[in-house]
Length: 315
Image 1 (cartoon, rainbow, N blue to C red):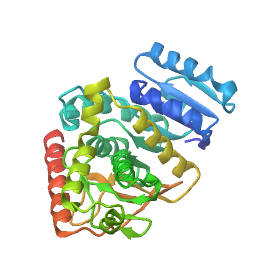
Image 2 (image 1 turned 135 degrees about the horizontal axis):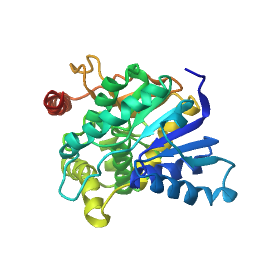
Image 3 (image 1 turned 90 degrees about the horizontal axis):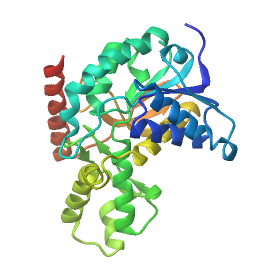
């Protein structure tokens, strides 16, 4: 294995999510080289050209379509390839199609590059993160999924709107499956250290239970709503990918709710789902022990068993 180029990223899959991620990555200025790979080489070439034409307004960068041999020195490999979610489809409905796509993609990656960090973005992200880990032979810290990073951003955004406060001052997590069994962790949610309910009261909101339920449902259903309205969701996830890559490349040790293989986390082991974790140049550096209320803990175990059933079915 050659040495990796920390200024090089690969994006595998140039659908809506892959193309939007490639654009967000170019805008970030984090890399000086990006290779795009897609089964449809014309699509990858078209996206590379289209994004490259804006480089005079950005930072110098080499962006090109390639194949697997071109990723041997990429420091990070972003995998967005897979069938997209259709209107009316859940993320788990995609599982068989996308696991079989991964069976052809992942071995081709690890054949040429065993040292990169692999970021899984395709859905259902938790199952596919587990699949990629199994098929790649990568250590656990270097293969993880975007998980509930976007769901958490959606939660912060909606709380920011609800409370009329900067969403970056809202501290709250969505954990568990990136999907219908996800859990909003209200018990530790706060706005700059002020417990969420107290802050709500400062802002004139007193129906806490009702508001929590509504906001958590809105977060869970936001992808369905966007898919019904415009056919696919890709900008929010592209910005999440960019944020995760920033934490890796700049070795920020940022705490993000990414999807990784769990070890006795609230009694859950051996599957991938989202919990806050420290993300830096080595990938997942540690999971962060987050305290859950008894109800949240119960919901997390249910979310885990939903995922476990799917894994048992597929493997």
